[in-house]
Image (tube, rainbow over the protein chains, first blue to last red):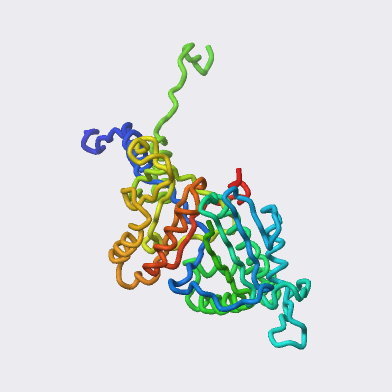
Length: 203
Length: 160
């Protein structure tokens, strides 16, 4: 008999409905995460009193309550901040015969600006009324300035971008041996242009 | 007499829906892989600023999240419109941040406790005063690694 040989077919018409139900459940209970941002290390508590630093090695940035920017004593547009920061960090004011001469700097070598990238400090002062969006934009520009210089050095030394090295390092598919090598390279570049950012609040 | 009998007028062949479940399953799997479960609902306006020099945040179990923004409409009657801090499911004062971090840190496994990042999800219209207060509290409990979580895009879009 025919009915013995053939198993009866299950009606799959409602499969789509079931799948839709599941789909809608997942749409409601989950969210797409924003999982990227600007990393920053806060200073340890109790390191408030800085050692005396010559004025030329400090790059003061002030943001007031109206989100206006005062860079190095001048009212500045945010768009110029990146260039100014690069110029300050890359200055290398020490002469060639002096100790701490910056051999890789390509700046103006102005004696009134920073001596060496590892002495240059960016001081960011914000007001309680400053908008967070502006603050992030400033932070972003500062990171961009450091990244530009670090990329340049990484290109010179390792023929690759610093940001590419970092991305590769944080990638979970990179093997441990490679990571060790990458870490050494990243350290090397970071020593050339260490990020020295001091933050304070001003009322 | 023609070999091919003419179909009756007005009768369209039915579209086969047999592959519909497959399509929907495909969508389902897409959403299952790219999204994560919500662990707390955000009770504040949380429009993150954008930046383009961003780095990817670490694994989820190594991150403690703090939300800041002005309360949503349904909470404005009790909490006002000024930006507030949200810790887990509660509104909190800056002074509560330290305790919260310590509590969350204790919940994590021992080997992760020294590698935690605090993710600050702050609305772009919030003021820096509140953020400074939070940072001060974070320093008190030695949670020094912070991540200003942002969307990706041109940073100058934050200004308007």
